[in-house]
Image (cartoon, rainbow, N blue to C red; front, side):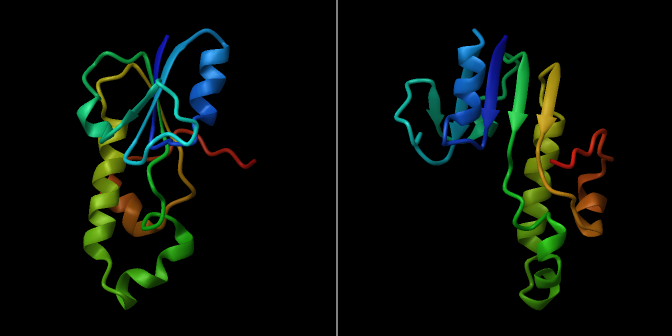
Length: 124
């Protein structure tokens, strides 16, 4: 499979898929920690073009997670929440047949803005 691991710069997930024989690539705004040639240093939005068989995305959870909900009002972070939800939705709706978007349990404002229910919740 051709695999994209979005929002990953460590290379850990990418390399696990490569060891299993998949054509796996990571993509992040940061350069790869491991200096891999299989890392796209850039915006994942620009590479979601229908060429991938599997997308695993790890979008930032800072504004989505229950743990930070109290700061939305106190620090007026609603625009940042809207941006985070738009990124999450973009991954969910990407033109990829198999999609996994990893994140902690979101607060109610994120759920409302994302507009999708979780299909799986896994407690490690």
